[in-house]
Amino acid sequence: MASVVPMEAPMCLVENRDRKLTVNPKALQILTSIDKPVVVVAIVGLYRTGKSYLMNRLAGKNSGFALGSTVQSETKGIWMWCVLHPRKLDHILVLLDTEGLGDMEKGDSMNDSWIFALAVLLSSTFVYNSMKTINHQALEQMHYVTELTELIKTKSSPKAARKDSAEFVGFFPDFVWAVRDFSLELKIDGYPITPDQYLENALKLIKDKHPKVQRANLPRECIRKFFPKRKCFTFDCPIYDKKLLTCLQNVQESQLEPEFKSQTDNFCSYIFSNAKPKILSGGIMVNGNRLGKLLETYVKTISSGDIPCLENAVLSLAQIENSAAVQKAAEHYVALMALKVNFPTETLQDLLSVHTLCEKEALSIFMKHSFKDENQKFQKELVQILETKKDGFIRQNEEISTKNCQTQLEHLSQSLRQAISKGTFSVSGGYNLYKKKKEEIINNYLQVPRKGLKADEVLQKFLQSLAVTEDSILQTDQALTEQEKALQDEQFKREAAEKEMLLLKQQQVEIHQNMEAQQRTFEENIIQLKRKMEEERNKILEEQNMILDAKLKEQKKLLEEGFHEKAEEINTQMENLQKEMREAESKKSSWWLSSLDGLMAILPNAGKFVELGLNAFSRFFK
Image (tube, rainbow, N blue to C red):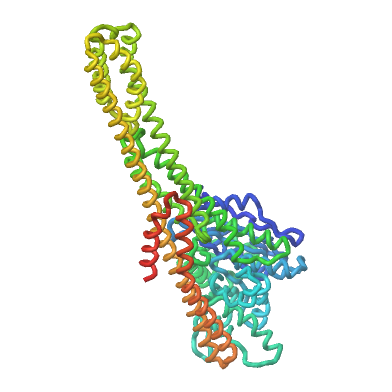
């Protein structure tokens, strides 16, 4: 899969027709072709508030996303523009411009709510764009944030529904509020403040139990609870000429108000430096392909009348991605084996040594591209596939060696067979002539290079094919006494038995080597599974600690503002999260044993690895 060439212009990603959301296949194809990590910036806000201008500037252009100059909403649905990230190497900046909220022509506020929810679900940085000031009216217009608890589920379990909103902080994007045409002086009680302080002051809860006040507090509370990382930018009017303001995309930079230009540059610089790549819970990196699949799942769920569930969407994505990871790893193994193995190998061990290296690489590829592989279903599938592929290479190695050896012996024994047909050895003293010719063939055969691991077996079968003829020549040779014939016959049988014994020992050695290869397979799977498990556990712990830290800060603010009951609610949430963390830690040992059992069940002779697995287990949980 090749990453997308930067788009020359934006394209509609989610179409909004007749109050129904559908994914545009052409735009989806562009998005899913991106295999690099994506930084996703979505902007939402009321229509005619200049959202598209900011997104064009993030794309490094003056035009692209449609800028309207009438009272009608210009952008419909969600539009996408994929560009190379200007500061993060090997990242793609995905810009999502949403249709204006509150469009009177649409007449369906629920449609707006879904657009808002999709922007939250898809983005890693969420920009809310409004006009003039952050006042009571502006916060009322932000009512969409209060509806998220009814539009998004984090867990599929009905029991988890009541805790969903408490977990939003774990996967919601960073929040940026852009206030346009801001003309107020940034001061509180005569002291200058920053835009961030202005936002935090606007989000302070009003201490009053009147229902109207409670309703007014709700947007503030949700923003504080769901978006712990917040940033605010204020923008002056870009230009005071109304005629030019209606066609901002055609205005030269020199015509823009210097303060507005500086504010826009600061906004873009912040986004470029601070907007994080999109990740899922557990530190799962999201590229364009994964983002596209998540989008399809979300829109399909919404269209069916259901509520998007993050857990279900991620598990559905994991099924697709893990299956692809198995295929990618298996294909890499086959290609690498074909490149590194020079058929035929002289011994089975030569082939198995290469197999071990190729298998390790293939497993690393699987681990890199897989996630949420519950019960190691896909890892076990890969182990089985690689074991089957390995057996295929072993058969191929044996067949090539056998064919090569048979061809060489056919060529070397041609004169011997011709002599037998002519009766050359059916004379007195013929047996010694025959033996000499046979030894000559054997010596020449032993000098042939690169015969492979079947050299001795093919030679033994060749000699066995001559046994009847050799005995006939021996018995009819009148130059030998009966005693000499009996001694020669005994010597022939003894040599044949010795060669059979050597072949049997070789087979036993090869069985042992194959078992050792399976043990190395088991060890490598344990090592890489343990490493991945530790990485995932550390990422989850990091996320949970981040959530606890955010809740602790919010609790502190609430206590300072005098909202003790709400602070106690957050304390309960923190206690529940800490309890879940302890339970997850206690279940770890049984999960690990289950993983060992699963891996051992699919490998032949796996019982011999039980002690190895238990030793690894005990080391891991010391």
